[in-house]
Image (tube, one colour):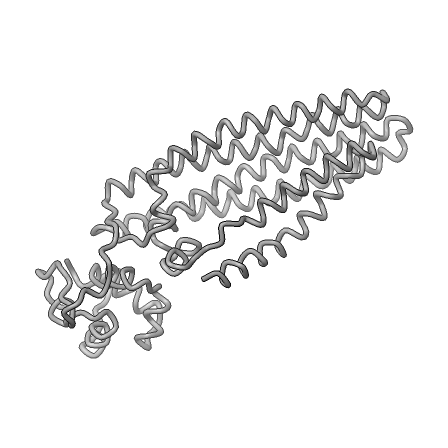
Length: 328
């Protein structure tokens, strides 16, 4: 094992990011990155510093033939980490791509299921028939049920890789380089998907505003036109959400193997809260939307609940982060 791979393995085993190791060494993160990429070699003083930080001998660091760490004390400095082979990494990335598509599709169905509910809700006001509104809700439930039928098998297919989210890992020789290369290749596609998704979500507001203006002059058809505007908006949003979710989950797969971002060693070792406030928050919003819409029979304006909910979502996410940090 060459020095570059030893530095990567020891850094991960000690739960350090490149930035943290660079800070301990008094060098830049780029220097650490070059050492791990075998683009440069640390000088003797840096080798000694690495030896002290990782608790291994300088002989182990300098001699390629020494594959097993030689610790400076009699005690092993850590518990052996779960090894991820090249085959396992490739299998996970392929499975994660399929998983990302299925979850994105399920999310798409949940969002687009609102379209018949808005249209039929608007028609129920024109026809003065609440039964139509009930049919719209029933159709939404069918879409959600179909989404659940996608979510559950998709999640089960990834259970064998759940350790990547919970346990510190040690990648075999060449795995980190392969994953990093594929991540760099995917970044342009990721940027396009996120940009495309955000643009679709923003554009979706336009037909809602236009239909809202037209509905004021539509007389008895006001509710239907307003509902149609919301339906068109949700159509745009559903497409945008599909691209955002799919791209984000694929990029998250690379982060799992590289132990970066939300899957860093520090976050895995820290205790995380079991409460997902963001999910609970949106479930309450949906329940509030349906309850207010049915009780007051005002489908044309209750969309404001979702608009306000979207604005407050970042605040809920920050509260979630604060709770997670407090629990560590």
